[in-house]
Image (cartoon, rainbow, N blue to C red; front, side, top):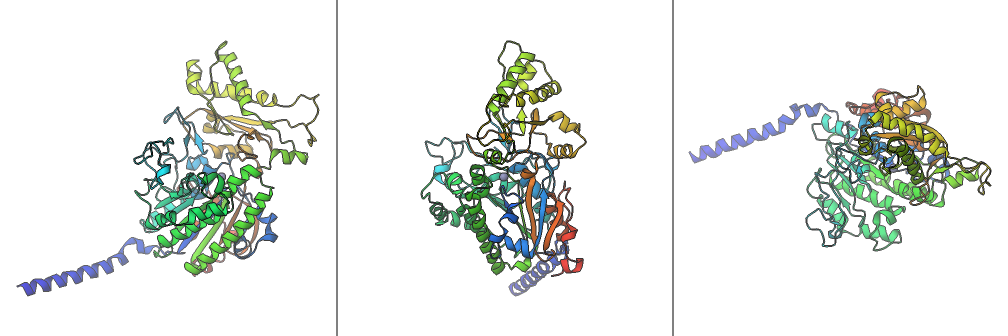
Length: 569
Ligand SMILES: [Zn+2]
C-alpha cells in the first residue's frame, strides 16, 4: 500500500512536471517573438540637437559615434509643443504623445484639488513613501526620522500620466514578463518615461546621492541596489567631483561629469542585478542623465563646462556601450538617444551678438498685473490674484481671489491675458536712455502671445504653427492659468538661481538629438524634420507591439533596413 502510494506520488510528480514544462509553450505569452533582448533609451537632460554636430570632431570610440556613424541619426528632431520642460519631455519620450495626450505639462503645478499650500510636482504622491533612505535623509513624515528632520519628502508615482508608455506596452504584450526600469538623478525623469507598469524607477536622495525608489514600486531596494549604495561608489563620485563628504550630492556632484558615469554604473548594476536581456522577451531600460541640465542652467550651452561635459559623456557612453556589447551583446540590443528639451544661450551672451535677449522680471510683472487687477476688480484693495510660480510659460491665477470678486474663469483669464502685452512692454528700457554695454538693440522684452487655459482647452488657438504647438501643450492641471510666450531668446530673469533656461516654443528649446542603433536601422544621417514622439512609435512598431495608448508618433521608415533584414537577426 505504502509502495503504491509512493508510486502514485511519483506519477503525479512526473505529470506535474510535464504540465509545467508543456503549459508555458501553449500560453499566449509564447506567441510574442521577443526581439531584441533589451532596448536601452538614453535621455540626456537638456541636450540641444546641434551639440552632436558641433562637437563631432571630438568624439572617439563607440559613444556618440555609435549612433552617428553606425546608427540612424536624425539631425532635425523638434518637440512639437510649447512647454519645453523636463517632466513633459520625459513623458513624451515614453508615451509618443504630447501634453494633450500624456497629461504632464509642467514639472510642478498648483493643483487646487490637492493643495493650496505647495505646488505639487508632476510625480509626487503622498500615498507612497521613499524607500531605504540613509538615516540622515529620512524626512519627518516617515518612521526612523532623526529628531532634527525637517524635510517633508513624500513618495512618488506616475499618477498623473494619462497614457501608456513603450515599457507599459512591452509589459502588456508579454503579460508582465518584460522587465522595465527607469533610472535618473531626478524622480520625474526616472518615473515618467518608464510608465505605470514599470518594475522599478530609481533616482537619488539629493543629500547623499544614494539611489532610492518609492513604495509604488517596491517596499525595499533590491539587494544589488543596496550593495551599490553601501559600496564606495557614492563616495567615489563625490571625490571625482572634488566635493568629498558633501551633503549636497545633487547640486555639487550632479553638475559634474562624474555624475554621468555614476548613473551609468548604477544602470550596469541594474542590468546585471535584474538580468535584463535574459528573460526571453524584450526588456527596457530608460536612463536619463541629469548632469548636463544641472550644469547647463548655471553655465549655458556655449561654456567650457558644457564642452567638458559633452566630451566626458562621450567617453562614458563609449565605455557603457562597450560593456553592453560584452555582457548582453550589441547584436541583441537596440539603443535610442534623445533629450527632453534644448536650452537658450545665456541672454547676455546672445546680446553680445546683437540679439534682443531682453529678460522679464517676474516679480515686477506680477506686481503690475496685481495692481491692474485690483484696480479693475477690487478697487482700493490689495488682493493677490496670482499664485507664486511655477516658472514660465505658466502664470497661475488664484481662483479664490477672483471668485471672491465674483469673477469667473473666462473673465479672469481673459483679463490677465489682456494685461500681459503692456505689462511685458513696460519692462523695456526708456527709449532715450543709454544702451547697456554690448547691446546693439535695447534689451526689450517682447510679448509674443498669451493663451488662456480655456482657449487651450477648447482649441481656440491661432491657425498657425504656434497654435499647433500650443494645442499640444494643454493638460488639465487643476487650476486657472495663462500661458505666456516671450520673444525668441528672451526669458524670465533667473539670475537668482541660474544663467539660462528652457520653457519656450522656440527652436532652441525644442531641438534635441534623435538617434537609434541596432539591427533594424539603416545607418545614416537623416535630415527629415522628425519629433521625439517618433521614438516610442518606431520602437513599438519594430518590436511588433501596440504603440502607446496616446501615441501620435510616426514610424521612421526611412531609417529602417528592408523588412526581413530588420526583423530576423
Ligand atoms: Zn530637463
